[in-house]
Amino acid sequence: MKTIKKEAIIEFEIKKSKFIGYIKPIFSKKEAEEFIKKIKNKHSDARHNCSAYKVLEDGQEYYKVDDDGEPSGTAGKPMGEILNILGVENTVVVATRYFGGIKLGAGGLIRNYAKTAKLAVEEAEIVELQNKKNIVIEITYEKSQQIDKILEGEKEIFKEYGERILYRGRALEKTIEKLKEIRNIVLLFN
Image (tube, rainbow, N blue to C red; front, side, top):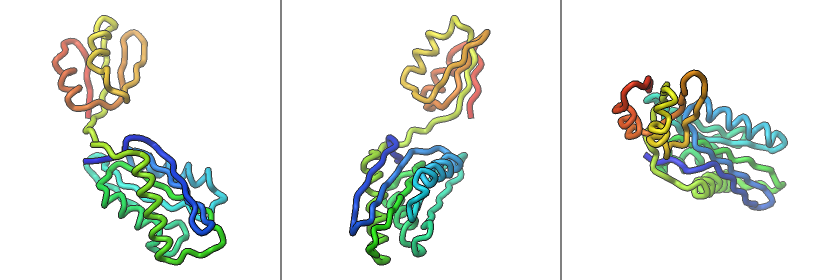
């Protein structure tokens, strides 16, 4: 399975219409909807903020496209098709369009919304999706060096300090297997 490496922004102009593409890797439907809302609020003065997302969450695939006032099937659908053609999952893309006064026609809209999605995906870089699980680890301070070494490459783990150390976040399955081998730690995952 493939996804994108990072959040990115692209923009171009065609016949005085300005297209701005925003793309982000996501892990839930809620995260996709929040990103779309954020971009719509940022560009509330734009004529259109069209979107597409595809996310696998708890074994369920969510796929949604939105033309946001453009003629039906000329914006969200071509963007969603680009995600499908390129085979990227867990991705949301939003195309903001500032109308320049010259109509592009249905074919022009389809081409340029697809182009926006394609350029955004290319800018964000396609990578292989790593299968991660949510984890919570509770340990004594004596075990922290050992755990830190195992979690060294994991970027989605956060620590909380109290009487014991609490780690929360997402880790690769191979990391979780290594953690299971350690005695006297509390490890929860799903």
